[in-house]
Length: 229
Image 1 (cartoon, rainbow, N blue to C red):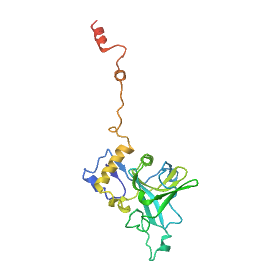
Image 2 (cartoon, one colour):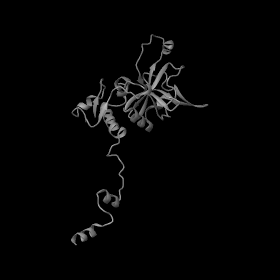
Image 3 (tube, rainbow, N blue to C red):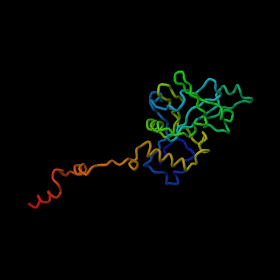
């Protein structure tokens, strides 16, 4: 995998061990522009329809990494009202029992279907794979991105900036070598269909003969007999 990026991440050095990475597997890690203010149609029914609750002392959004989604949090302005000491603003970070002990086992996000409300516990949404997110990666043309808003109209808002995984806590979950390999595989085999993974199509002998320019009305044996005459 050959990475082109204006910033560095914790797994980049792995490519240097492979002479800079395979140029046949490019990862263009630049800003994401989906058009229409980065709102894109997508089926992500497993994610909540609201990514910021007015009753929460945290803001949250979703990190998408190779088709898996991770909940990310940061303290909201409301958090200062409940903090006993001055709260310095913090950057986004995936759900972590050490950093978010106050809500890790109790806080829930909700998804509403008309009159029905479904609660999702945060710890259930760290590293879960969703095939719909693979399709979304193809649309976004990126294996790593953030969903900061999920609308009820089957559309999502994609952040323009690609997250630096080193700063959001991914190194605690995935080693650099493993992540590099997963990204390379995802880009070359999931985002772009790989010839090696295509299901072979059974072509009949008849079709193969026609494809090679032969006349199926005349067998090879008859053709040889005809040539003798």
